[in-house]
Image (cartoon, rainbow, N blue to C red; front, side, top):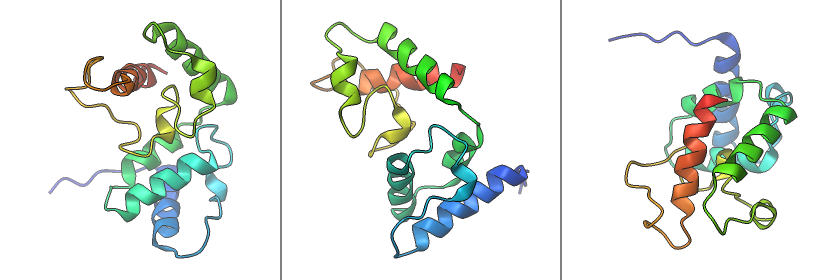
Amino acid sequence: MEIMEINPRTFAIFNALRKAASSEEALVMPEILNQCSTASEDAVKTIIRRVRKGADALPYAQFFDIMYTDADVRRFIEAFDEAAPDGYIQEADLDTSMPWCMPWTWENDPLTAKEEDTPESETPPRTWGRRISSQTLRDL
């Protein structure tokens, strides 16, 4: 059995997410996430719901361990807008609770895209946007 080493900050985030997921009380944002611009309360609540349903908290902890700044998030959203399909209106997207251009907020499978995600796989082509943003997210 291979033992994976986890840095102390990732481990602390992992424990904070698992603790929040096991609590019946209202979410109190883990202090360790205060410096991460992608760790909005809505995004953290979404991930906690996923962990409660059995998702592994580690990939989310690893994502939040990256100290994305507001500038990083703006660059990502701008790049998403440039790569989006015709008809994508980012202003309207940003007014939703789970914008395509912010994959860390997605309720279903946050931060993931599947191989079969294509522009034709949904109407509107939401998963295609997720695939693009997932690929771009890795480049940040």
